[in-house]
Length: 493
Image (cartoon, rainbow, N blue to C red; front, top):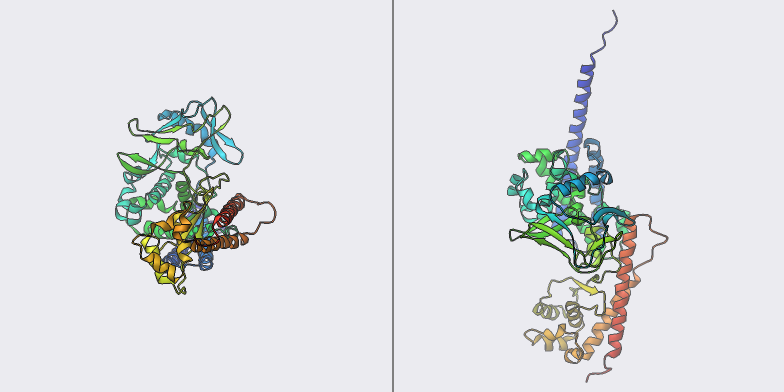
């Protein structure tokens, strides 16, 4: 008789066991990497390195571990891909079934924006564009009332950070095929242009923008949160966490966090501020203007009004609020060149080696500025805010001037930029102060180098645009300071 061939069923069992061993081995490797990541990000947070170069070195260490983690998670985790444009019809039907009103408005694709909202009829400025009932919103309140509630009750991070709560709740609902919000989740972008998706080469191109430091800090924080929640999800005996184990990866967590950063709204529910996703409303793109969105507590719905006249075929925009481009770049993944609320953060402080450090810090303390390490230059006619003006005046005082101003209980005149304030403060002080800042702005501007060729990715396009806007702020400030210096008298009155 010939040799018996083992039944196929036994072969399947053997393959299954081998597969389980492979997964278990990878899980052990992953656990070691996650612990290493948590330690690395926590130690850095505790020591508070102050230089960008040290932050960059630390980021490269974090990124190397993240790459290993992603490689393992890609091998052991299956995440369903959603093609958002194919799901739009079902999404629109879901909105209409649950009471959303948007007659004359449709979802459309726009060059440079992907999806947005298009007017299909005339809308006059101030007219109601659309309403979204609370029922279809996904809120932190929904999270607290869901299976995630027991985890929120015992986790201090979730109790104090509703945006993170919403991110985890989004992941939980994404894992459920019968989720009430499935039509909404299925039309969310599959990835984002936030800095969490930037490569190290792309991040490095941010130099010398202050956005590099804030980007590294954000990436580090999200990496630490990922490691923290990974350990919680795989160790705590809370039923809902079992449902998250198969979907929670670094990639899905940064996706959920980016969804929250780019789409969250704060609304008043029962008198309390609540973090929420507002479907349809969150497809409106940004333009300069005024806030024309609100939550109607009486009618239990969000309302969006036209900030200007819109004609059929035009994209409908809303105003996201008075935020600088660095913030839009960091949290929303875009830069708005015509941003009237733009600003540039300058790192300024009194050196520990300054012989007049103590009296300078004493004066800054009286104005509530001690401990402030960054001051803003603004876009527009008056780029120097009160805090920056006070700092450069105090920073450039000599011993005699510091003694004189220290005798004032509250030296409020130091924050004034009114005409004639130089005579009160001291013309010599202002000449030194404005000259110092103009020189500083010139040096910073000189550190910005133009990139060769056209940017080959959306990330690089946004980086170039952000830096161009920052150089414009510096140019404007230099011209303003030059004009101020020309108007100062040549000697004390």
